[in-house]
Image (tube, rainbow over all chains, first blue to last red; front, side, top):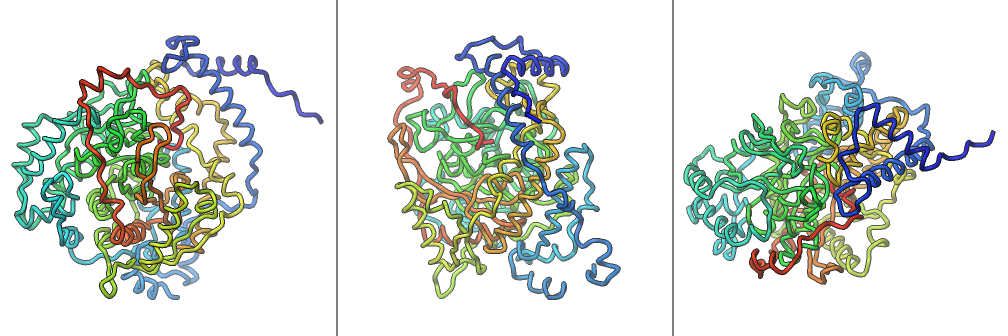
Length: 86
Length: 551
């Protein structure tokens, strides 16, 4: 099955603004587009788009499904077996 | 080898030899899981097994070796040159009084602080002099009694503004001291002021509009060369001789980077070795407090004074005891020649030499040669497969958003140029956050199994921040900044396995015993602040300024 086309900037912008609105983040206190300002809405949006696209790269990393979870060592069993003497 | 035999051996071995690495791996995994679960860690469940407690080179007073046996004449002539170790020895031998030391520093502050801008807040001169006069030196004093420190402005200080140099904390006056500050005070240190820093611990010190404030002490006449960050104000204060030592924090290079940029020895301890209680957080899982100092011994004295368990920070509980760091940093000699205290193999990655440029290659080669001279074995250690992938995935994304959401909802403009880094965590999906945690676990395991099976310390950098391993930064030469054309110090960073602080200090103490890079001092400013202001416009950091290695 063919992969769906990657989303456009405009589509991502809609997603980003929706997410901000849901969380209660208001960007309107920033200028819309002013490179001289410490931050503006255009840079926030560009950065968010870039982050979301990078997230896709993270998805490509597939950890070993058999990699065991961390366990404390010595495990309680080590005392029973005499391998470890506290 | 039996547990008992290993414990016996551990008495004279550095602590990293006595640590069960699987325990550390498990503990870090539990810390990361706790961050996700939002639970508090109990000390009991995560306590190190008895095996891990045998280490260190303890016994007797830890401060015994902290007083310098010899004091440089030039440093006595200008007490702001003294290291902690030298100043403490000078006090003890009645060559100098704490108030003399304070007066010397106040004179420099009066002359140069308007140029350096290392501090955001300072007590009055009268208060500082009174504090110095109150110092009583007796048999119970620590070497920090009467010593002057710069403390990064993200450390809570009771009744004193603590802003993290950000509008987010503009009006914040803590009601209690951070554990580190409280312990430094208890040790007798006098705080010269709250040091400037990268806003919310990122990059060089700057105002909300991007105007740089603090200069690098090595280029005081040219603000363009960065003091580095985020503990840049501390670095400028210590290098510019406005304080004898200082504190910083590191999430991704913020102690080691300014130390390298300003010819200092910076120590980022193992995660959990020192308390984060009362420090403005960036993350739950990879913030570290640590000293920026003038040499390995001073770094040891500072960390010795504030490391150890703190009931207010569960991440410090159940750890192996703090070993005698001062002894580790004391120069060890064999047949009169400085040698590394414990047999140590220094690993370096292939690109340490192959990736060096014309300026750094001779410095790096010379570093390796010198380490051999002081008794280290030096060996190239290849990066394990997946190093880049796993270290890259162990990033911070997401954690800061969680911490700061209430402030983000209040007014995003408070975050100024730091805003995207704090907002973007809300675009990290839960499956990818799990991947980040798994990647950290795999990366830590990779480093323990495939790097530290071949060497005892490894020339590496901020990739160790995400997995909690200790780092020491130190100067190893001089170079030229390409923008300003000015001579500037160069340094590098050495990492160790869990609780390898003793090992790091021993290696760098031996290196500094036969080199003098750490003794170089920067030139004083040549222009007055008023003149500098009248001729130059405020310097704003460029729009593409990247502080990703300075958090």
